[in-house]
Image (tube, rainbow, N blue to C red; front, side):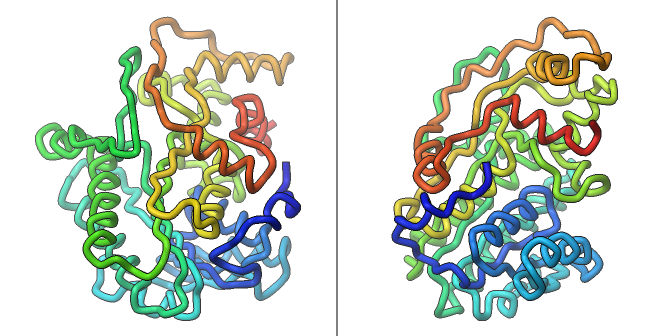
Length: 343
């Protein structure tokens, strides 16, 4: 379903249509979709990238779709450098800080301090720009929990993944280090907000496994979480071992929640969980077979278990309905849009 302006028009917005918003790390899978949703909703977007070359395809997509001048880029080579975002925020009304270290290094010191410092640099830059009305941090499900099949985990807005921070130091692997970086960065944001009481709204989005439409087929976009499903489509069952049962979310829903969190005063101070529903790879295979009856796919695998965690998804569901007229997408829609480029 495309954006329905009728649902959005009744909302008292922090930020007006036509205003400029900053999306950091804009060439990434989730960030590019978020920029797309802002543009679709009538905002202008400035996206930070590490080099001009990373923005070229964004211009191709967005200029064709929305007209020249709606999207612009700003190069931030190193988000850890002092004042990294100070120039990028000038003239913007809101910020979605989405830039992240996606090397999947297992070295704590190569990732966690960079992600934390980058987040704080973005927040500090926001405090220096008088026109900022809202700031959204893209956190992660891993800031609250890691997938643990068949274990009942009750999550609230006060749940923090302290275990992954410890494990990233004592039992480092790429997922532990990634989870620690998001946990520590989000926590640092809220600590700074509490200490400085900035004059703008702050919210965090915690998405689980993002899948669904891909703005730019191939390359960087498909090496993200969107690539998991495409591997299985091609018969590569390595995801059976590397990606345990967890919740999925349509990347478009995650992007829309960023728009909502920036414009809706209801989101002030909130941690918003972008979790649609639990899934296993057998569920994905079942949808593959239903949607593509003539194609051969891998056999189901026994013993996955299931994600039994209890997540506070209702606030995000209500926000999506309030602004877009529909809640989270189901697995069928996610599979169909994720595989659209290869079918």
